[in-house]
Amino acid sequence: MSIRTYIFGLLTSLVLVISVLLSYQSARLFIGAFQMATEDIMYDIGQKYPNNGKSEQQLLDYHISTDWHNVPQKVRVQFSKIPKQTDTLHTKFVDWNYISPPNHIYSLMVTHRDGQTIFISRFNENIHQEIEMEHPDEFFLDPMLLIILIGIGVITIFVVMLLYIFRKIANPMESLQSWANQLTIERINKPRPNFRFKELNSLATLIHNNLSSMADSVEREQQFLSYASHELRTPIAVLRSNCALLEKVNDKPSDKERLIRDRIERASLTMKSMTETLLWLSRDGEIDVPLEPVNIGELIDQTTAELNYLLTGKTVEVVVTHQNTTLLLAKTPVTLVLNNLVRNAFQHTQQGRVEIIQVGNKISIVNHEKIIEQHAIQSELGFGLGTQLVENLIKRFDWHYETYQENNAYHVSVSFD
Image 1 (tube, rainbow, N blue to C red):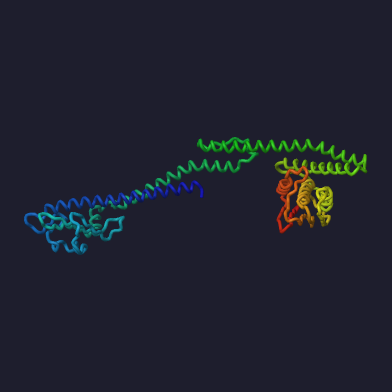
Image 2 (cartoon, one colour):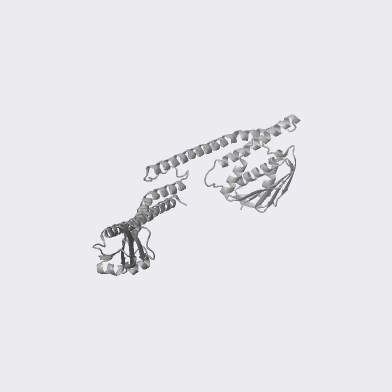
């Protein structure tokens, strides 16, 4: 539920309840005032009449009697017993639907004077006809109906005014919501609209400033990644060329020297992979990469050979099955995805089997871990960028990626659609 609907419903319900209560109270006061006036008149008549020794007397529409049996029969029919409350008006309305005058009214009061019981009564059985005769050419509106219509009119006016106010207030709020939804880093430098109200403009400024701060941080981070990765490419290339040169200068080193050379070679391969990862993570927007024929089988063999050092000292069997399928793909992104997936499988398998299966455009990697208590092993120079890179590239190139775990086997598959 929106705030607009909630406030509108709440205020409308509140005014409706208030209008109903006020209308009911007005109607009750109107009837009460009419009853009080009639009661006072009948009491005054009962204190003065009947006079001159009479036991029964008629004064205008009022009948006064000292004998209950002399009270008009039509009144006695409505009041089968003499009311016990004295000096109080007793009234019965017949054919009354509350919003129009009753067609029959019967009134009775019992009072005492000089030790005598006085019955003052009055009845009218043709009120509608009398009203038509008194207002032959005029439209007569019952006061009760008038009170109800005034209440409905007040509610209607309030709802119209409330809709007008909501339109003046809600439109800027909806504009602010639409502007905030469409606000992106690319559009952060566009002028901020005016939302009419000071509070909304302050909120828009706060949103704009926060997003601007985030945009600046992202830009600085991307620049750092780009600069750092570019600067690292030269020393890495020098390091790898010198490793190759060492092999040519002395191809039969001692065991200790061979250990050092292998460690340098592994570190250079890891740094090369990290540099390419940082470069791809620093890119934003659409990636314009040329497509070229890629032999998936050869790429798998090359990747497993380069990362085989991660299995040194482990009891891990690597089973590679491929079809040597050639696909038209962006080679660098495919290489990075495959490199990170195979690296992750080799790192997290201490004892067991790693299966790499390629069928058509789909590559599945399953590592079966025999050790129950599996511990994550961080690679040399590993900074946890592999998963982020894979998700980033797969999302940008709209490839299909799936992972799930079953018993002690972890399954990863990617389809280069």
